[in-house]
Image 1: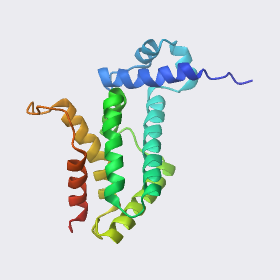
Image 2 (image 1 turned 180 degrees about the vertical axis):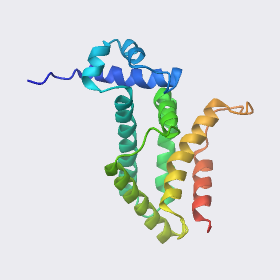
Image 3 (image 1 turned 30 degrees about the horizontal axis):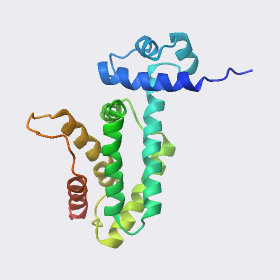
Image 4 (image 1 turned 120 degrees about the vertical axis):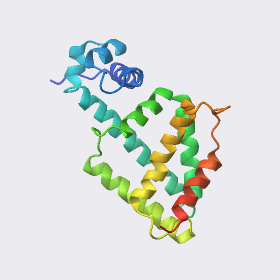
Length: 197
């Protein structure tokens, strides 16, 4: 009979993984560190995952899946305006970065690490979502016809995550405030997506 997974321990492991990676980086983080931070034994962690890469992969894929579901929901709410979809999506990223800083920083690190890739199911789902956004944008004139699905994905997901990270980090030391203007980001994205290449 399979052992029941303790959901509380699993939640602690996931939180400890994100926190450990944010604190020491992906390469330096170890299963022992994560287990200690989660207050579980290393053996328990290995019972659930084959190793660090499998654990981090699961968290990464969970996050991408969550973002896809969020976009799907927002598209369902408004199928006539990319601006409205973006407005809500960007606002949600800001709230997430403020309320879950470790989760936000963790996701930023994984987006910039070559070891983490999407599985085929999530790729297909992401492509379908970008196609839907492209169709809406072409119909409303918000997205140029020659803009690729990659460009849409990059500007909606990566650009926003990068902007939030660098703004929060105060990369140049010139930011008087970490407040992020939703309209500024949305207008930037729409300006880029509307341009013919």
